Length: 285
Image 1 (cartoon, rainbow, N blue to C red):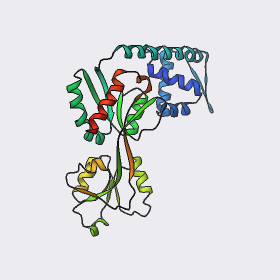
Image 2: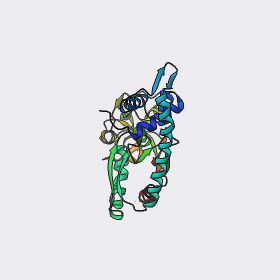
Image 3: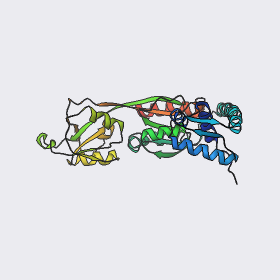
Image 4: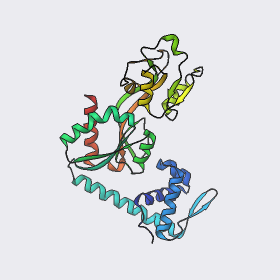
């Protein structure tokens, strides 16, 4: 028995129908092409008919696809207006939402945020999602996450981005490590982070053996023990179990910006604008 069409799948279809290209649509949506292809397949199964004709240069719409494009666009417009009306009618800071952020960001932000928000707005509940900032951003764009605290978010037409804090990513070592010992130490870093890639690119002659770890707190703990050097944001390095110091003042840090993001169609949501103001105030204390 066919499933009821998914709202997000229809939204993805509108983008595919407009671009006539799955790859271009995925770029505009900020999600992967396999995710878009899977959504198209689910829609065709839901309606029980072909909506697209695939060819080497992109896709074409079937007659059914043309109907879905026309009426789906109208549905999306009506839905957006409906949400806007409901949001404006509800001025109360209450509801259950998902909040996404990188685990390291969570450790230096959420303890300052959640308790205060719970005290002031007891009807406001958050379920937490943790992943790389770029993946969390993608989930906000695809409407899987309501709000997020992310580092250096990509600009996207469907995102509202508010700057919160600035930070620097650089090379750290234990304060207790002798200068001569540092040359033989391995380098711990998360190679998946763009900041790591950018910093290493600026150090072409840096010959330390690299050890990968996707947990910045583990890296900071290992560096604090004198077991290696580490590429870390300053806010993470300052939370290490023992004092760290920058490896060299000659290394130019990579700047970081922590932002609060949500989808543009939540722009008029009373919770969205108030939440941004509350979080910025709490983190500036």
